[in-house]
Amino acid sequence: MIVHKFGGTSVGDAGRFANVADIVMGQYRAGEGATPRPTVVVLSAMCGVTDQLIAAARAAAEGRSARYREIKAALLSRHLEVVEGLLSAGLARLEAGGFVEDQLHDLERLYRSIAVLGEVTARGYDAVASFGEQLSTHILAAALRERGARAQALNAAELIVSDDNYGEAAPLMAPTRRRLQERLLPLVQRGVIPIITGYVAATEEGVTTTLGRGGSDYTAAIVGAVLGAREVWIWSDVDGILTADPNIVPRARSIAELTYAEAANLAYFGADVLHPNTIRPVVEGRIPLCIRNTFNPAHPGTRIVEQPSADRTLFPAIISTTGLS
Ligand code: ASP
Ligand code: MG
Image (cartoon, rainbow, N blue to C red):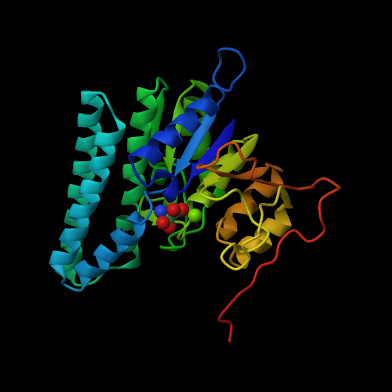
């Protein structure tokens, strides 16, 4: 089994959604003989959506009703545009469009209650911030079904159990393991491709939480580790982890291999491609973590492993931190 995580820029518009659907189908059909390869997808919200969801919650709390309504309308038309551009069958469009409308209707009710209260709690932020992934997963699942796969969107609030540290919740591994084994494994064994919301979790009581901004990488690592995936692939918009920040060093090139410790350090000190917690879950199971580019899928990207090959260069990358003083 391979767990694939796609980031927000990989699903920025209808064309990019189609590209992701094609990549997933290619991976799914890469199985031996006629049996599809067990495939799990973890997906982010479309790029910019989580920021907008949070900005609208803030606007609602400050009584700027026109602003939150405007953001909600923009989110509605952006997602409906994707549904129109991506799905060809009338029924699939109708179903996905209806889902988007229902979700945004619920979201507006949440904003309205925030506006009435005049404040937004940490719990309220997470409730609002989790909407982007609900929308994107539902749309991608529909696109995969049109391509002939059995795909199902799943809300990770029902799969990943966390503490109640809203905004930066920590997963509770024992109940998470139980849920993933009970609910996800049977689907995968039946040849279904689950499309799971990244970033989202819930407390044991079922209250929605989030794993911190950029947390979809972390979700993919948790799912991969618990299910004993062969590899976890993080699909992003760069050819893996680079030797330096390309904005500062134009000749920066991608690194073929890194150790878990090196990748964890790079992520911790701010290399933007990986959520810093992502390494931890995969270390114990020695599951390789691969960083690949959705816009250049033929490029091998970066492989993060326990033991890199002996002929690797000694210093893999340079990172700088500005503004410390
Ligand atoms: N959508 C969330 C964010 O923007 C999580 C993610 O993309 O990984 O932070
Ligand atoms: Mg990210």
